Length: 120
View 1: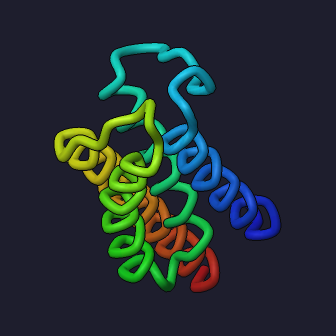
View 2: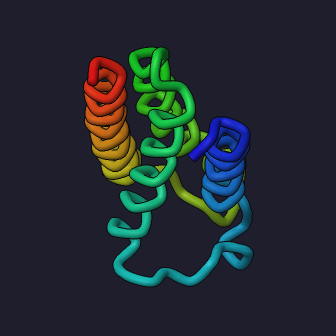
């Protein structure tokens, strides 16, 4: 995927996660699975997208996404209908970390494949 597509997609995913996390509970989409699986899947997808969008800055992206999971969860204190939980933030951070690792592995594979093709 080109960076022209993946960078905006990564930011849109993060904006959607932010909206879903801090919006009033009645605006929250219904869960597909358990809330923990939905949380982890959303952050895994965002982590993967950011790792693919910013392959050379993966460490900074990792710090920001994992810290962001806790910060965004904390923002729920601003909403009267929401409640922040450390467990939820941990699930989100774990999902982000898994997505980032998957993206890092894919980037390394792509790098090795490109290098092998260039040498041939």
